[in-house]
Image (cartoon, rainbow, N blue to C red; front, side, top):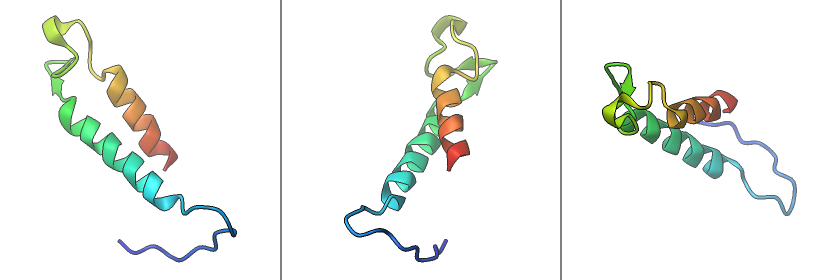
Length: 66
């Protein structure tokens, strides 16, 4: 994937590496917190936490802003 160059004001840091990292973490959460019979495979020990768990919801919101 190629990105167009954008003008970044002097003294400001490029936000793209941070946003890329945010996307990587969100995707990792999706890969780990899997739906297992409507329970989170990580958080849902004994089906105490339904799926999607809070971590998946937060990851989904983070990806939505990107």
